[in-house]
Image (cartoon, rainbow, N blue to C red; front, top):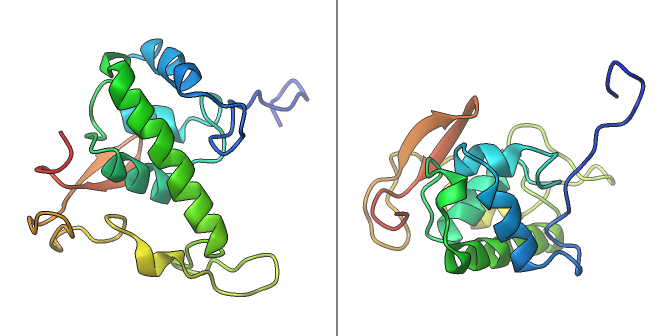
Length: 150
């Protein structure tokens, strides 16, 4: 809750069927910060955490330090699709059990076995074989491929 006693305004959820690619594009065009920061901002887009921000940007072939307002409509479409795919796959696999995560039934998730970049800094990219890079963005570790994500 905010100091005013009100709940914070959350952005649209990527898996909501009414969340259209054009809505994401328009939202990104207004933001002059890194793409990673926008994805982590729950007021811009709800429900995307550090793991799925990294995974979605990798699947969309987008650099996390790119300024969000500079994305083309086509890039926003790829990001929209990759956000939905990443989150729906994670739900199907009961989430990513990194550190101490357990689902509502106390079970480990299985998505961590399918992560492409998160937690894999220095390891080879599954697509091109180049070692994955790690930087800090929006106060969070960010792993990406310098070749596949431009």
